[in-house]
Amino acid sequence: MSWSETTLKLPGRLWAALGAQALAWWRSIYLTAVILVLVLSPSSYGRGARGMLLGQMYAQTMPVLAGFTALAALLCAVIARIVIVTAQSYGLSRYALDLVVRVMVIELIPLTAALFVAMRCTIPAGVQVVQLRMRGQLAAWKARGVDPIRAALVPRAAAGVFAAITLAALSCMVALVTVYWSVYGFSLAGFGAYTRIFGQIFAPSLTLVFVLKTWFFSLTVAVMPMASALYTPVARHRQGGAELGGFARMFAVLLLIEMVSLMGNYY
Image (cartoon, rainbow, N blue to C red; front, side, top):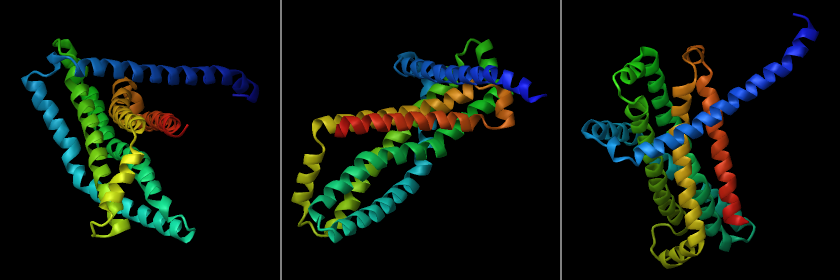
């Protein structure tokens, strides 16, 4: 193929790539809406569905709970020590505690928990959905009148949301204890000042932004791998690279949520 022919075909390829990306984004939004409706529907919690949901919640949360808690404690201790020592060297000790709490609890922990759940839980759950598609299980369920989204995706997505929120909440508590220990040691002398600073930081508006950010983080990491697993052609999954595209879209949404939360907190 000559250079001129390649140049003439480039706009068509570009438009095809943009159309594929737009379709992938639309399918992710559509699947999010469908899953939210099904999660809020009482008919999704029959006897078999409850057992499947509880099994997925246990499988996606318990195996990673202890490891992530230990990782969060270590990360908080290291970052808190670095920030405190740096602030002391510049004569800014009075701002060190405020800075550590804002950076660790409000910004870093929710994003870290979401990414950890995505890598260890929801992306592998998406791979399970792909395997069900390859075996024809989803098509068999649909032929029998069983909704594949309700049967396969809702329990995994709900369990992913639960895992992300649980890890974020537990890690925030661990971070608060670790930061206090890094500043005051094992003494209770600074408990009053610490709780006062904590109350000043978590104003109602900031608390609302924090809760919404954690919720949207958990929803993103739970649903977007499911959308990639359900709608991406099986041939692309066999060739590889489909999971990478889904992860890139998921990471872009996480960054967008983080940017919006930063504007809501500090502007």
